[in-house]
Length: 380
Image (cartoon, rainbow, N blue to C red; front, side, top):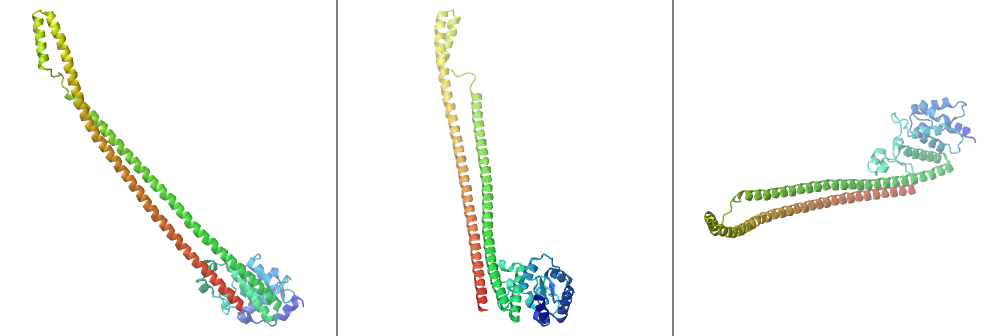
């Protein structure tokens, strides 16, 4: 029997309730179907299906992928025509949701995942307890699974068991494909989450190092400025000390009584015109004066050197103390940096462990859900 003959026979046995439709909805769909059934054969060209759906208010494109898959499912032989029964399957099981806002549409047509035996989970309720991959699953795939399952059940009711077996096998393949896709999507997202945490940690670590390097540079600069200022102060102290002692030096050194007495004798002999004797005394007095001046200069130099040494020792102690304080500050900065680094590393470890734990729970929940679905499929 050709497809158009089968369509004529089947169209007489179709009931609106088989598709969850009211009589008014059924009549509306059939009226449009008949408009495209130009030769009254009970079938319309598959190329006109999208146009017929648009006439029924469904904004579907001619190249809609789900529509193409659905037509391929209800017309496995690729005859290029579908009957009213197949058109009703497309309309009621379409991802466009015909009749959702109208009365009489079965709640099963708006649900979620369809089991082998036709039992479906209710969309929003089930998705609330599913992993993100299930909750965010592409609606078109869900709809196609519902369409295929409805076609299988319809073939089963009509006694077309070969077609029902083909649809059932295809359902299992698609469900396995979906499980693999979801599992891979979950793994990819989990990997992305781990990489995201790792990248955030590395960025934080780089910023942490940059901040502390800046702090250390500022500290070293401040320490260097402090040392330079102290050295300038010490130099100013030495110069001030030397200037002060230069001002304190007597303009005329204090000579000994012996030397003064020799000068008097020298003057007396010169006045008496005893020049040769005066010359001898002058020679001795000059030697004595040179010796005394050298001794005074040596004593003064020793005194100045001792005082300057004490000043320099004091300055050295100040420099040493400042250097030690700078080093203590440097060590404190290093300790603070290490402590903060350890806190950040521990926080990163806690976040990473928490994510690993959540992902393990998510993976286990996904595996249990898939195992439950597999068991359900085997029991149906």
